[in-house]
Length: 351
Image (tube, rainbow, N blue to C red; front, side, top):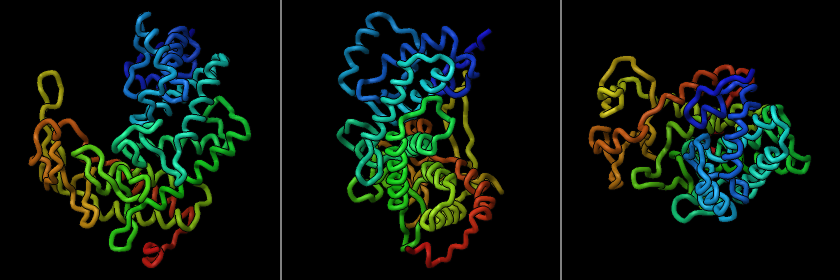
């Protein structure tokens, strides 16, 4: 008997369902939707609840959109998560369309990579900040993890690309790591962390939306460091990058504030407040000044403010301004350092 899908959100359906569910009629129905949403270029649009029923008119529209490549992206988990869905489907149901869909996704990711190793948020390129190398919301790290699994020929994906594609993924991963190392920001000559997006030409930290100014990111830097830490036999450059980022996380952690959420009768957040606390956290600001590490906050006017209560309710409550994600780096770092025998001097970090 097939397991039942009990999840409502598309990412949860992909990641949390038991393997046996992917052979169910419900999974096969959803797979037809996922195939329809995939553009011919190989990518998918974002923020789609792909399990939702489609009427004939919607299906016709999606077929027409296939050749357009409109809104294909890796933002908000798009494309990488649909590829995972297809892999989980193919593990249970050997429908060659699932395999073909996954491999088209791989080719899409390979085609989207810049010569310098970075990836834009949208491909084909979309005008505006979308062309920047995008670490925001783990976009590039998600791609890099796909490349890593394929290049190492692990069993994470049920679909095994050709040796030629495996080799291309290996080179893409290596170029991506080189880009990550080159974009790690130097503060007074010392390596620190990363911005949510970097200029695709100069590699410098770059602005995105009006309230997303060039900065050092407590959240986005986390998954980058964890990716670097996952590499077996890391190079000296990777050792230095990780050690430098770990020290920056230690330096910038906040332990004297905690977030209080004011909820309405339906349990929805109507306000966020940062209150003084003793031995709280640790938490990190999403945006920190490139030179001082001071947290800052912005409304849609793009003007820096020093505290969360200085911006309007819409942005204050509609965005994640703090994160405890770097705790995972600090937790894993000691064992990683012992394993890799890291002894990095201050001089090394000023490379």
